Amino acid sequence: MKREEMLRRLERGDDPLDLSIQKWQDIVDCLQKIRSVREFDEDLERGGDNCALCETFPDCTGCPVYEKTGCTDCAKTEYYRFRLAWRRADLWTMRDAAEKELNFLRNLQHELIYGSPKVCGENLAKNEKGEK
Image 1 (spheres, rainbow, N blue to C red):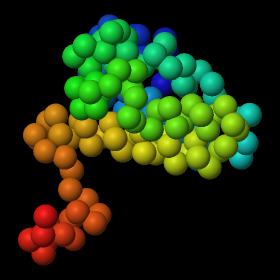
Image 2 (tube, helix red, strand yellow):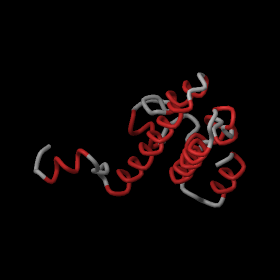
Image 3 (cartoon, rainbow, N blue to C red):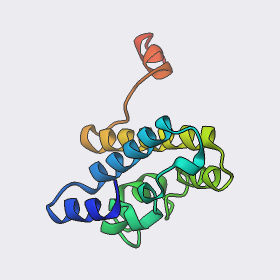
């Protein structure tokens, strides 16, 4: 999602976390289609300039990512790993970090709605056995 669309959708009242999830889904989709970092659509990722959460919570106060991690500027998420991989032209790591960032945001949304993180994969198998 590019900045203009994000601003338009925020203005009409769309949820900032939903918009951030859509942005990262767009990034993941783009990365799956390209063969070189040079093909990446840079307008999809402009840091805080096209992040609905940053637009809504400019100093991070009240941002659900900040509330979850306790860190400003999306530290302790895959965001910085993504940016570093981009600078290094490492497409594989960009893909991996973008998918993990998207999953982090989806899990955060689930936790905010349902009060607990999603249980999946290995954790699901443990829960079925009654393990913690």
